[in-house]
Length: 364
Image (cartoon, rainbow, N blue to C red; front, side):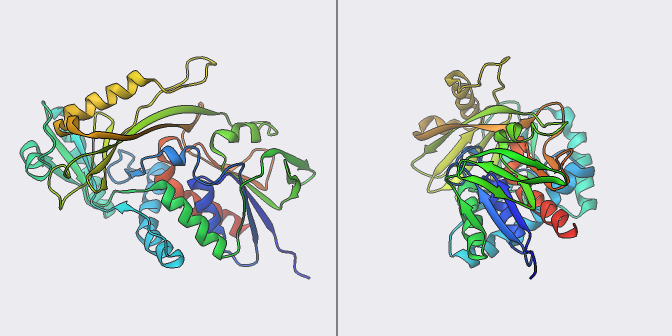
């Protein structure tokens, strides 16, 4: 009788769900996803879903390859998931406009434009007057120009995660959202399984995609991974009419503040980046959120007339003393893969992370 390898994924945010979906394409494997709560509840549920890949200054090496792989995969992934599940995944394909306030940076951006052209991607430099013509809602002082990336986009992270879960379930992946993982079970050949609140579960492979929970899971390793919580805040606003030109509603970002169109004259505004101080847990600071709103209104004065309909905060997992994300074997465990610590780029890098994990397991 053929033995079917059992792959257990710990965590069902956007990363865990994407990995489950990609692994479901491998023949003759059994995949189980464990989480103590429903999908997309932690960092994923508080993400804005802005994909800044082409417009990123990451131009080579692993950082760029992950971004490029994800953007290429997203072009097929969204229609594929919608066709498989019948679910709608709200997304905005109209690009990202990044405002520039320092004229001396024009040369830096031109180098990026040239590099992306050589790599097969489009970026455009807009003079301040062009920004005013194409995005008349933007009226900041001191604007030098903007970079427009038509290939970058925005996706609803929760809707995407739920679609990934639904599609993976249709392909035979098992999800359990009432199980708390307690520890890995070490054996002579690596990890034999995991201890959970529902008892021991045997596993041939374990994928740790638990975000902030990854720190505790890796303590069995001689070189554990420490993931730091970084808090972000955002608000949802409603106006009487869409900002700017109704037919052109890109994501606009400036001074690290995102203005994200959601349709129906609604917008997400965010997000802050708040680090913990010492050993104290990081908590939402209303003053920081007020500063974000003031900054957004300075970029787009019409936002001052908006109605606040929601606000939230969430913790992003940022690796300590190493680059994000962590996609590798857990030291000392040849059958435990880490897919964690994506910081502010979890939604952007989820497809590339899932492909990397699938390829590693498929080749082993």
